[in-house]
Length: 135
Image (cartoon, rainbow, N blue to C red):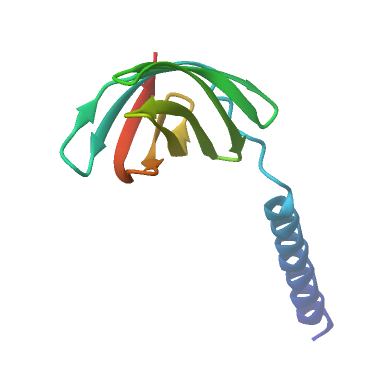
């Protein structure tokens, strides 16, 4: 009887420590993925429009800077990266108004990401989806 009690106690302690270790690992903030480099995007807008812009990113800690080069010209880009989520964008002058373009990304791997795009301007807005691969 004493032996089975010891086995149960040892098993319980192993499960307890394994669970505690798992909880601690999950509570440690994940390190941001580094998306520095050149990316080729494929953007599909809800209104049927399509574009294939290129982005060049430079990431330092959680801060993202870079350039956009596509149908809207060449623009400086700024944003953030937290874990496997990035948000970045730029502003562009259209028809006398300033439009804000925001990309939200799910970083799927070091060479692939996808997400949504949102346009906001005084004259209206739009949205769409995109995918990107690192060059």
